[in-house]
Length: 320
Image 1 (cartoon, rainbow, N blue to C red):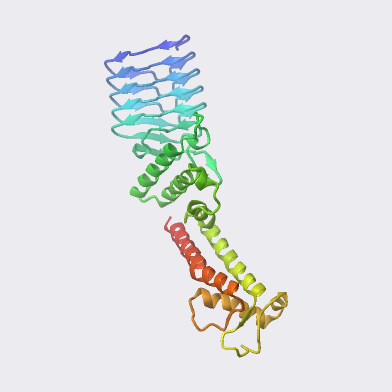
Image 2: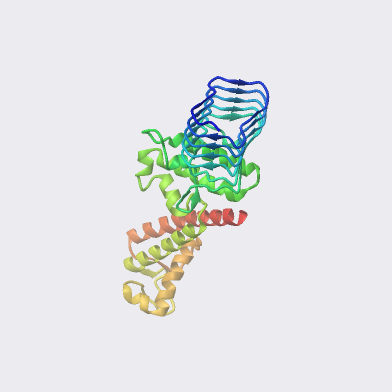
C-alpha cells in the first residue's frame, strides 16, 4: 500500500511492473513515466488523483477491475500494445484526451459516464457491454454533456461521433452506426447559432422531420400531419370540379360541413391523394390561386420529400 503520495515522475520501469491490488491512498503521479515491459494495475485502487499524463506503455497494459475514486488524467498517454479497462470503475472525471494506441484499447463492462474521449481516436477502441450516458433515448459521450471549457467543443465531439459511426459501419453494426450518426448530426446542427436557432435551416428541418432519417415514427407522424394539414387547407379554401360538372353529385367542397358529409369528406381526402400521386386528371382543383399554389408546393414538393425521408428512416430501422 502507498499511504503517502506515490511519486514516479519520469520514472523508467525497465521490466514488467506489477501494481496489482495496490492501494494508493494519496495521489499517484506517474507523469512522463516509461514502462518498457508489461504494466499491470489490475484491482488497484486510486483513492486520490491518478496522473498518467504523457506516460509511455511499451507492453500490454491492464487496468481491469481497478477503481479510480477521483479524477484520473491519461492525457497524451502512448500505448504501444493493447490496454484493458475491464470492469474498471471511473467514479470521477477520467481523461483520455490525446491518448494514442498502436493496437487497441478495450473497455468491457464499464460505466463510461465520466470518461472524456476528446482529441482521441475512438476507432481504435472497443466497447463491450459498456454503459453510456443517455440523452433523449440515445447513447452519447460524456463530452457532450460535461464540457470542461467555456466554449463547447462541438467540432471535437462531432469528430468523435463521426469516427464512431465509421468504426461501426466498417464492423457492419448498423444499430451503433445509427446512434452515432444521430449524434454527429446533432453536433453539426448546434455548433452554428444561425443553424441551431433558425427554424427553417436545413439541419433543423432534417432533425424535426425525421431525426436525420433515423426516426421512422417521427417521420411517419410528420408525413401524416402534412397530409392532414393540406387536406384541411383545401377544405378551408375550397375545391371545385375540374371540368365544371358535379362529381358524384358534389358541386363544390368548402367549409366544415364537408367534414360531416361522407361523400364530400371522401372526395376531399381523395383529392389530396390524387395530387400527391401526381395524377393529372383529378376530380377537383382549388377554387383560388392561393389554394393552387399551396396544393402544388405541398403535394409536388414537401410531401414527396417527407415520404422519401420516411422510407429512408424505415429502411435504416429495418437494416439494424
